[in-house]
Length: 150
Image (cartoon, rainbow, N blue to C red):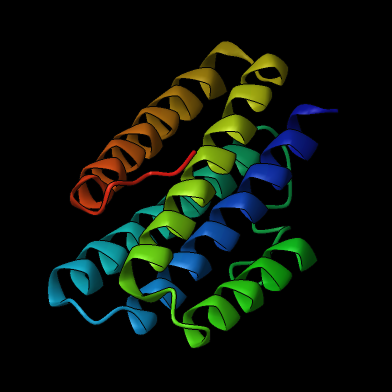
């Protein structure tokens, strides 16, 4: 995979993740969770914007993946989450779903780090650290409920 393809993929991953957090904020009942998910959505959108700037720096067109597109798999996953909420998994289920998403996002960043130069690496490592901090926060939210399950 070329550096630009790697960044394109991460832009889509970030957009998918932002959309998941947007949906999660709409699906939970606790105001603290709504605020947390809204903050995470904004962070993932910032990550996508930074990655698009990095694409431009490397000679790409910028915003190739599109700010609102994401992937087909991400759309399917968000639809599945909505169905889970409808089927009464509630706030805990939404938090766990977001936790699983954060794990997948971290895995994509770890793969991408193998394909980028040192300048891009610093950006990806910072964004990966932020995503891992989100994962730790989600684990704390789930702890009182006897979760995470994995």
